[in-house]
Amino acid sequence: MRTTFSWIFATLMLAVIVHIITIHTIPYVVMHRAMSRISENASGVNTPFFPPLPTATSRGVVRPSPDLLYVTCVYDVGKGPVRFTGPVPDGYWSLSFFADNTDNFYAVDDRKLSSKSVDVLLVNEDQEAQVRSGETLVTTPSDKGVAIFRFIMTSPATRETLDKLRHQSTCAPV
Image 1 (cartoon, rainbow, N blue to C red):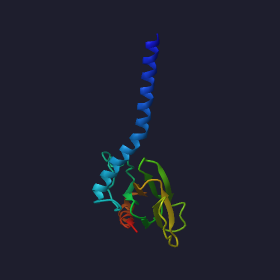
Image 2: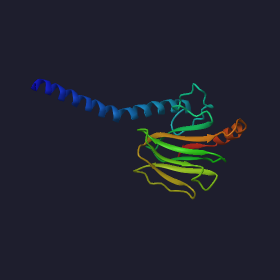
Image 3: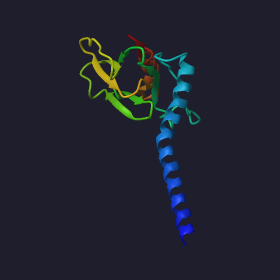
Image 4: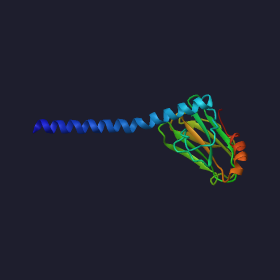
């Protein structure tokens, strides 16, 4: 009886340990893989990537929306702040930041902005930065992560105009 109880207890403890390791490891593995793919396509970090319009087979972003144009950027604030800028068109637009564990720690959309452009300065917790007029200071919980700009196409006729606007989106070290 004591041996059976010991095996059951050991099995449960092993299951708990494996569960905890899995829950804490998988987000980092998933994000590392995504950051590697994006930075390869963008020719490095702190450089925007302008993927083509998503199709039914696109999987650079999990289940991308076919009516959104994306701009992605793997950021690294380890050596200094990174600035994100771009125009905000009429219609839905957003900029979201994801930490290295997949947590979305900041997002802004066209409804929250009072101007037709965005200017975000991203820093880590140890950095101080001079904030320009109209600029938003955002602190990231991790030195590395991903930023995603999204532009909605309300009709096929808006694609060319939005594509020109999205190519004005930037992410660059300060």
